Amino acid sequence: MRVRDAVAVTVATAALALVAPVTAQAATSCQPVLVRGTGQAVGPTSTTAVLRGPGLLGGATTAASFTITGQPTPRTVTFAGTIEIDTRRGTLTSPVTGVLDTVKGGFVTRTTGLTGGDGLDGASGTLVLAGVQDLVDGSFTEVVTGRICTP
Image (cartoon, rainbow, N blue to C red; front, side, top):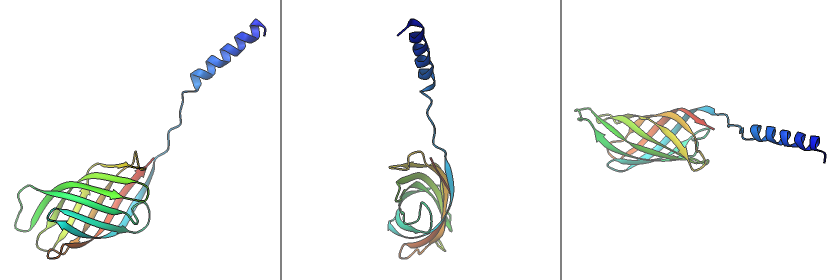
């Protein structure tokens, strides 16, 4: 190989080395959520539920645990805790805050930092879980709305 050819190969190799480290990042896709759930209190501050409907959360199961926050009023109690949602693709976890009507059983729970794992790494989003709990037997129905973004 001539010197001129060797220099050309060296320059081309060096140029490729400068460009090669560039990696593509996956695009994020955000989807609206609208599913219904049925569940049961499994203790004074824990619940489980099954979600039904389309999309990522259809067929998912949830487990949540709560602690009472603030001072209960004659009609409401506020709570905070965590929820774990197991889907076919992975797990979503989030802190939650909410309020329960202690007379009629209505509740609203909001996620405050949804993250994914076990196949949903990098997922994020927000959810609102609103429903009614039977305050005698602990069963409840809920509607889950929001948005989940996955890489």
